[in-house]
Image (cartoon, rainbow, N blue to C red; front, side, top):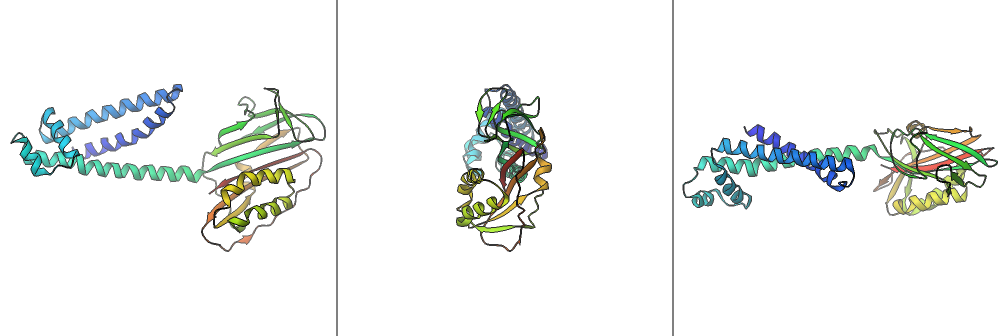
Amino acid sequence: MKTSVMVKRFAQHIFILPLVIGLSFIFIPIGLVVFVISLSVVLFLKHSISNDIMKDAEINKDLFIRIRKMVSKRVTKEDIINDLSGACDEKSVDKMIYYFRDTSMTSLTTTLIAFAILLVILMATGGAEKPVIYLYPEKETDVLVELDYQGKIIADYPDYDEEIGGWSVTAYPDGKVVDKRDGKEYEYIFWEGEFNKKVNWDLSTGFAVKGEDTREFLQNKLSLMGMTPKEYNEFIVYWYPRMKNNPYNLIHFAGKEYVDSAPLNITPKPDSVLRVFMVYKPLNHKVDIVEQEIIPFERKGFTVVEWGGTEL
């Protein structure tokens, strides 16, 4: 009986999470469904737990409610027995205290640990933050950009077209694009996503940079890679505020790991492609690391440039 109550109470705590999530999105059909189902499960478990406790403690519903109120107020066992005036024996009161104090705290602690582990796992998966794609054809060109991202796209501008798995645009030599679906002009294609599994970033090489020196470091390295001032300035404006107050930042520019996680197929095929994806980790102190080799990028013909990043 004790094990049954603990298992049910643990399940009850677990279902509070989807209950809250469903409530947050209750105006969306799926959110309402999640909320109703979770609420039903929580209430069913609550009723089932109460019946199990009353059966084990051999008390009726009225006594159950009276004792539960006193236990929740941290009334001592002696005072509870005195207040009941012999309506319930000491053994039953001990069981009520056990169920409402000991198992409740144990199951809650276990649940919090489970949530903490889940949070760590979710944080570890990370995501691709603000990748932007610049298209530079030699002349006005209709371009199909297909992104097979290994995860969930959570933001896009213009809208990601699920039917084609990307964007269909008209691109111009100055970098502007016009989306075929809405006819509007954009400076670049923006998307952001969450990886569906943890990416094993290779941090065996990189740079340990003081937070206050991050801006100058990025100006230097991104320029060396072949990004234009417009491109690297937009990169820095986004990332520098998040990095400057860290004592140090471990910075690595990912290659194959990122390309494999976000395959990009562009038609017509570009003559040159630069994909810059920064992986960084805040540090409390400087670490020794093998400096990463930066290979300059040569622009030729139809050029595509993308930048993004993630924090570990």
